[in-house]
Length: 270
Image (cartoon, rainbow, N blue to C red; front, side, top):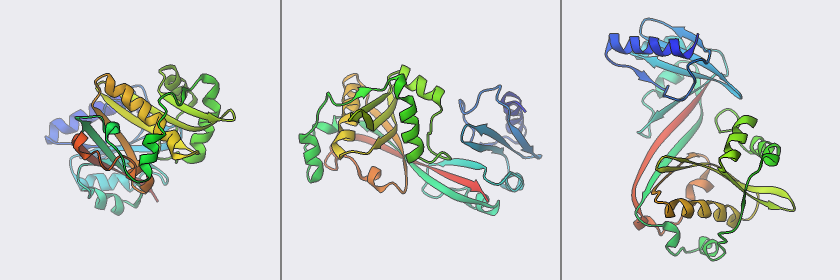
């Protein structure tokens, strides 16, 4: 069934029951995309095939109706639910539907009132600040796609991380949204980002060299965007990636105007 038809069904559920909870948002799939659908009177679940996984979306007016459908979906199917509280309000529904947590992601959205990189750092990060080279890195080229793809697949999880297709890499490179650093002709560090209106999304970073390489790339892009008037920066972090969660200038709290945290819990059908 096409997504356009499923969206009509979702609107019908909301109109009839007056409320609807969903994990499907605009832009997640095109209207012409085909999906496998499971439905009952008060809920629907549809599975969209993606390059590296089968992803389930849902919409429901009653939790028991959702559970009935989730019990039917195939083994290995991934589903996600974004929530503002640390505890997922639907976690019990997922576990009772023979699904288990696969990963938990945390999104931090920071609005700055000052450039945090201008605030002196202490400890090991003080050295990074002293070694900063704003000319470090170059924008990736089409010839780099095979190498970037291999590095990504060696490092990230194809079921829940942004492991791009070749076509997506081509688009990223054409928009100059990937900065990389080489040693002996090989990419050892890269940073993928995307400007979304007045926000900068730090999409992906990989570093197989000293810490200052990634620091250089991220700071270079941050300051370029900050000087253009961008003040809101956000990124998703795997909750198990303590190194990424702890990065940043701990002395720069006064540069932060506000911070918003949300969570994305990923489940897989057993």
